[in-house]
Image (cartoon, rainbow, N blue to C red; front, side, top):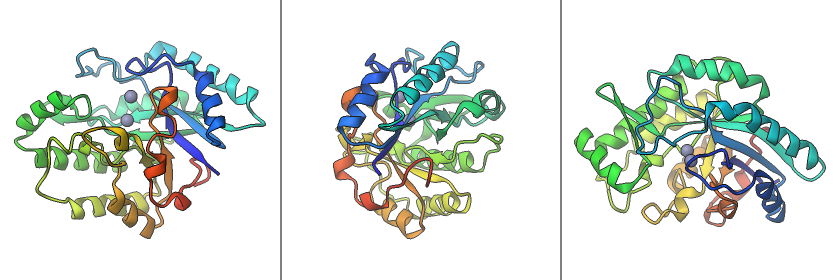
Length: 273
Ligand SMILES: [Zn+2]
Ligand SMILES: [Zn+2]
């Protein structure tokens, strides 16, 4: 079993235009036996995307075509690889109702999905933590310190775990330490061990899987997977299912970070873990 539970597609406006089928062909070359396409689910219609081009997620009008395209590939490659329809769903504090609405509408078509935090709420406004190092700098001054941004990030992940998002709530937490994306430029003086350990306890108690995300490894200012090794150690001790995620936004991004993961033997299939 070699699975990738976190793959973006040409439907992503900040990704590449690489055709969907090319991802499948490349995944076969890399000997993956299962993949989930997890495009960024459309943001709630009343939410204003804080990124400059407002291109954080797929267009709501494309959802049905997206699902149909994956269903076609699923059939075509049935004997070679298991392909899942999925979404990376944003947890946005204060937009839970609209998120439930999306999940209720499409949940029956979803095989596997991820719940991720990219946006943090501050003073009735929202910021995107992973957009760029410049934007991150502005965010740290709004929150007062890098440590405060970390605190807000982990608190939001905790809220995402506890949130009522209806019967189709995703069962996997995306890149739980994404706030470390620019860590080489914005070091912190705390290790957040207690906070992260308590998050892991919630993840275990609530039966979530963890996205063991290789994208951070290839980010020049991160150089580590999300989450890093010590967190993975703790997760393995607690028997939390780990699902590799390349978080590829291009065909070339498939398999990224995979070689650097510790505990490859502990990786599970996204639909069987
Ligand atoms: Zn993306
Ligand atoms: Zn993400």
